[in-house]
Image (cartoon, rainbow, N blue to C red; front, top):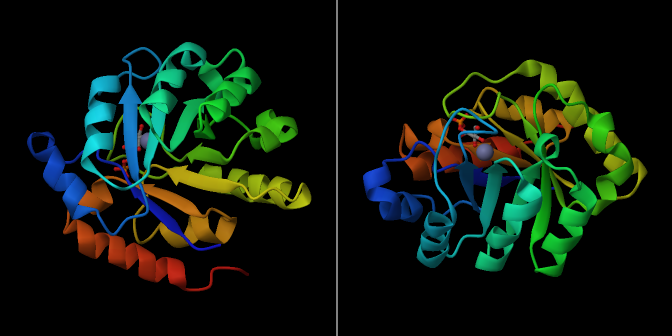
Length: 220
Ligand code: DX5
Ligand code: ZN
């Protein structure tokens, strides 16, 4: 599985959002962190900004909804044209129904798990999702330190997917850099989000470095 790199624009220069999108053209997608100040203690953007981003990039948009009541609000992101709509298991009361509706609207569906939520929580319904987002920081802020305790969970999810022959994307979100990327690849991830690592340096070079790491064999 070749690595997909989705830079998070959470910590880009917000006055130059359009430039940030230009700077990550070599990525595979753009990761948009939607926070409502309820599910997480931080507030970012809503649908108007998501729409503006969709109109300003050709990259697929991976909308990471850190919001309460995704069963209601996630649909709008699919209708707006986000390629992947990812909501938190911890916030959803009806994840299967929500996944079905999002699929019917043409989106790929991601389910995000906080660091303390075990892989077993979605084992039986894994086939309902195109992507699992393993949070490797407590959601809410960019620039945090990678939580290594999530590595066994990534391994477990990849084992579940292989057993069930599911072409599952396993995305890891939080604290990804050139040190932590090999660890998550070895555990079985194939998609990574990188925010501060990309925007604190030359974004194009940072993406190229991550790609080089991704191209080496991490299987054991
Ligand atoms: C955290 C967000 C992440 C984060 C990634 O709640 O979901 O997408 O911004 O940023 P870094 O790579 O800086 O951890
Ligand atoms: Zn995110």
